Image 1 (cartoon, rainbow, N blue to C red):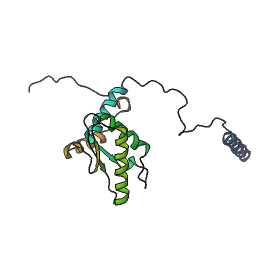
Image 2: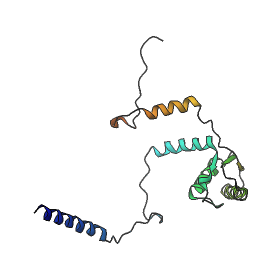
Image 3: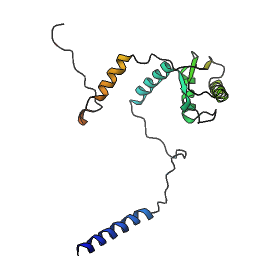
Length: 176
């Protein structure tokens, strides 16, 4: 009797799984298709974070291999977006972007630099020049003590209820 209930339970699970597997969804979702409807409005804080992102980009002043389609000189979507934003940010002042790479293929490297320069020339016509050269990213980076402190903070356990919340303490009272 027990064996029969196991068989019927297994058969029921198999039938249920087949029903879900054979369900043909006529509406397929395309992840790369053009947007068909308006986007929801951006939260109010989006502008605040966009400003922070711009400040980080200005400090960094770089592009990397991820901004190109692998094994080609062509810009990726991320590369086009990044260079387009740099063109906007540097339109009045100009500047030098560094291509930070470990690639040793000289021909591909030169073609990628030329592609980035050409893209920026079309994005910022007749304005201050935005140059692209081979080199390390700019910015201050982190000191060793800052990196070690960051690792220490990352290792600390955090309760789920307070995760991602800023706990600000007021000025401490006491002798100084």
